[in-house]
Image (cartoon, rainbow over all chains, first blue to last red; front, side, top):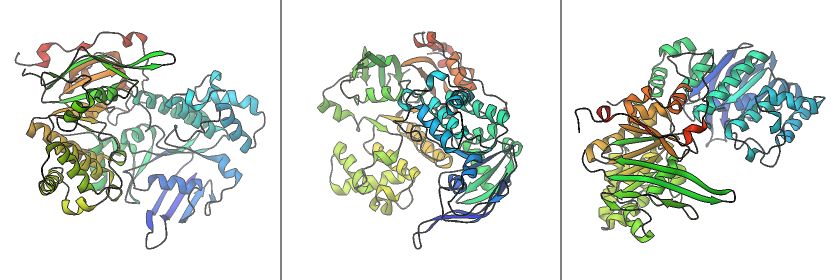
Length: 250
Length: 294
């Protein structure tokens, strides 16, 4: 479904050039859920942005569904099959667009018919009642906003969802609801996930395999069973797993 | 138990709104000794507002009332601003969540620490400078001479947070209120910052109020925990017993966390109950709280 080889992403020009991603590569098969973990600045979100066409300064190979991508231009078919959900539901929804406007715009851009009939369907999919259709973002809680953002991503019936820290701005009880929703949606719609998070427990819960990143490089790729055992092959992975497990008094 | 550093009884913070008076904090009571006290709850539970109320940082039209709010036996509730300023910073200090928004962007780090120190402790520029260097050393900043010259945008988040702590600790406060001090930090930096605060409590006998949404972290780092829900303390317990919590809210929060050691296909979702809003606080028996007797 998704194939990445020798991906380099940089920002700025020399001498201020910052290499955000260096020689990254991994494969995600259809129906799989793949995680990217690492500390801030490790380049994990940058990979998602390069796939989505939000960054054009990259080289290497990105293949989605057998089709090779170039620069930051993506055609309509691409956005139909690939969609992204962002970290902060307080920033990713237009404050003066109602839920109805957000969803109908997304449906229109995806070239869907019967927009009026599809909106209640989308709201049902993400567990929001139809009463939410004409609300504005300020009338919604953080979890409800993230549900709207997920509904918007589902509008074009995508096959690959890029999830950039979808729950890190939410309380733990709301996080549980959103993670359950994402699990259900993946099962119902046969979605493939590429999920970025700094929270190893969240990745462990949601993903089948993951890549650990540090300073723009993929340190290692492992499956979740190894993560649960705390069995990283690299020092950095073991260090990250130990630090994430909480605070120990020495 | 020795006399508490801080004693709070029935603290309330109310804001008038068009829909009537909204109480963000509704009757919080606790004593703080020379210990690490964790305050946990979700956003909107009133945990940050409790910290702000103690420091007198609730702005009008918000109103703070309490039966008692004593620092070393002296009432500090609603003191005039002039008197409060003598306490704030020098006797009770606060570290906020994000160093990016707490440091002055156009002033060098050294000048900011020196200013904070001299404001409370007086003294000349040279002694202030020496103190600033000592404090940066105390929070394990290598090459403090260079960091003194730097501006906030030139340091990383973890270093910024350590600088904030250095600044807050320069006047040697009795109590430090830390509001989500590590939420903006990476896990590896988090451990360092916690180690620093930990040592300050044990070495200096400072009282620490540690406000956080991270239950596991609080369970491991603190001595005692208050769980807040809708402006009230619903349960207090010894931190290491957090996983034996009895209140359904605390249990619900703990269960909703994904765990690496216990895989599940679905996470249990918290079912909130109206009765939690006004129920009594669940406390452990004195026996477990003070083993060996009072």
